Amino acid sequence: MLWIAQRASAAVLALCVIVHLITIIYAVRNGLSAAGILERTRGNYGWFVFYAVFVAAIAVHAPIGLRNILSEMLGWRGAALNLLVLVLAIALALSGWRAAFAVFT
Amino acid sequence: MNNDFRARSHPAYWAFIVHRVSGLLLAVFLPFHFWVLGQALRNTAALEGFLRWSEQPLVKFAETGLILLLAAHLAGGVRLLMLEFLAWRDWHKTLLAVAAGVSLAIGLAFALNVV
Amino acid sequence: MDALRVSVWRGKESGEFRTYEVPQFASQTVLDVVTYIQRNLEPTLSYRFACRVGMCGSCAMTVNGKARWTCRTHAAKVAAGNALEIAPLNHLPVIKDLVTDMTRFFDKWAQAQGQFRGERTRKDDFARVKPDSAQRQQADAGIECIGCGVCYSACDVVAWNPDYLGPAALNRAWTLLTDVRDIARVERLAAVAGDAGCHACHTHMSCTELCPKHIAPTASIAGLKRAVTGAVLKGEL
Image (tube, rainbow over all chains, first blue to last red; front, side, top):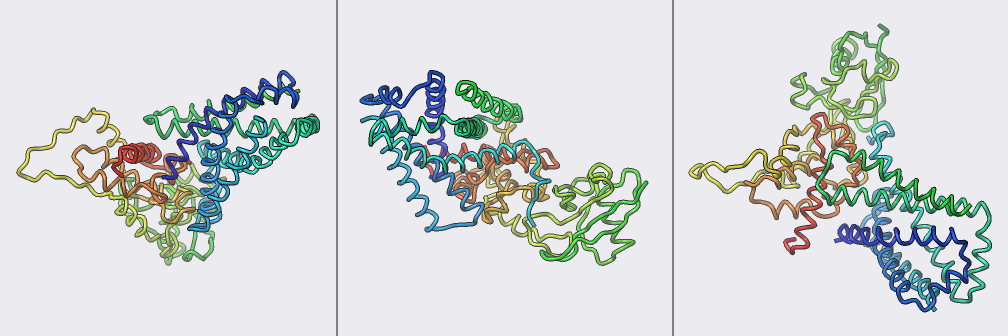
């Protein structure tokens, strides 16, 4: 159920975010430019798969979290809420994968 | 009647607030993040232009804030995963302190490297 | 000693706080204060108590914002300056003044399958349970609950999710789950899974902070989360 998906995606994200934070600090420390970043990601299947998995986990984790906030803080329930959350999930997944693709090609 | 701040003034509750607020703000930030990266689809120059814009101190300050949010959400999340899936231990308050410390350390690492 | 200025909730869900001046005495409990008001100042004040000695849980009320047993709370320790604010327990319908309707609290106890179900009869031998086994120790950590409602009042998820079973009911379900003699395991897991069950707990730990018996419902609920997850992965649920 949703709770298990939330915790499972959280575990995946824990690993992805640690990698992401290390990457960010490395990039910032070495003053990487856009060209510098892109020459590392273009054509690199490793990074592409990593970011694709990262995005998928986010598309599961964030909408479920938002669903909790909406139902607990605003009292929304039912099919309308679930539909909104599903739409958000799809939007996040598509825009995220587009971004991953953008730095891959 | 509902609880007010008096019943909520204890560390585990603040940890919940930090976790919920950081999650919400990160979720709001993400579409913007994906859009910026998607700019690279046009050409490198578009992304470079954005990175140039982001050199301003105010943006760097905001970025540090974002890193802190991410680190806090990560640390708080790992704390929850440990509390829920490992057999309960009595040092849950220590765990909270460690989580807070780790997220601050990460935020600091970023801030010191970006300046 | 200066007199205490005590604000007491009068009415039902809608009502108001009315202030009374109560003389301070040594070792005075909040229950003493409420009793003084009812006997000397306001005969129409309604409140609940029974044992007066911290065994029954009937006198639970919200004192200065936190749910407590009033018979075990020294007025001097919780008074902010000389001010006390006494209100009924949160998240329950108010019958009158400081008295709440505990029906929903106990209904949820039943919904969480908080009743023991065994299979031995009087003709069978005693069940042998080692008191120092890990399972029994986990159960023992939660069985002292007397159903006072303090944790239920303290829990914000109860306010945000009206169907949420609440810390006490879930704690009881956990103590039965870890009881090796109980045979209703799968039904109980089904009862506590889902949006209104253990998964709604956000580990605020207000219940653990305020439980007068020092039980940690959060720990029990974490145990339920693990048990449900295990059952789902094994295909039992």
